[in-house]
Length: 223
Image 1 (cartoon, helix red, strand yellow):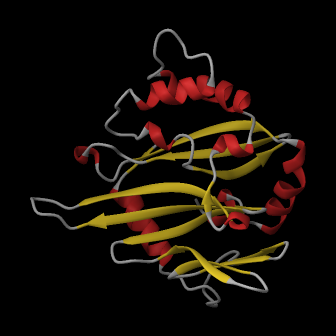
Image 2: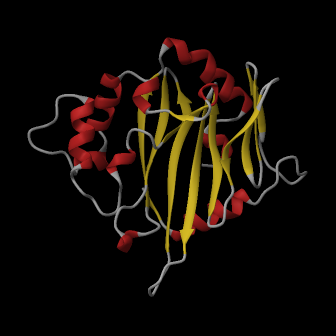
C-alpha cells in the first residue's frame, strides 16, 4: 500500500487534536504496570511515581501520532517536512516502536517475535516477493541485509525491522503493519505499508487481549 502527501497531511491534522478535549475520539491515555502513558497535540509522555519523560515531541516540521500501545510497547507514525533550497520541499512519514520500560529505546520486530516467524511471513508477502534476491536468503538477518541492499527508491527496506506496530488480532495471530519511508527525493511523501500475520507468543497473549479490549491497537486508533 502506498500513501503520499495526503497521508502526511492527515497525520499532521490528527496530531493537532488535544488529549482530554471533549472532541477527542478514542483513548488518549493508558496505564501499564507503574507506567502511565498519555498523548495529545504536542507530545507522548510517560510518567511513573518517580519520573516523567517524553517519548515523542512535536517540533517545527515534525509531528507524531500514536499508532498502538500494547504493554510496554508504543508505536508512532511521525511525519516530517523540510523547507530546502530548490523547487520543492522534502517530506515523509516514518514509523517506529519503543519500549517505555527502557526509557523509550527502539524495539525491533525480532525483539518481540521469533525471527523464524518473521522470516516466513516476509517471504510470503506480495511486496517483498518482488525484491527477493536469488538465491533466497536462508535467515531473517540475511533477508533484511539483502533487501536493504536492493536500493528501492520508493521504500526504505532498512525500516523493516524497526518500523512496525500492532494492528489487530485474528484468532491466534496478530496483524503487524510495517511502515516503510521513501529513500529517493523523487519519491518524497511515499509511505509503503506491509501487512503480515504472526503467531501470538504465549507471553504476549494477555497483553494483546488487554490492548484489544481497551482499544489501543492500530485499527482502533485510526492507523
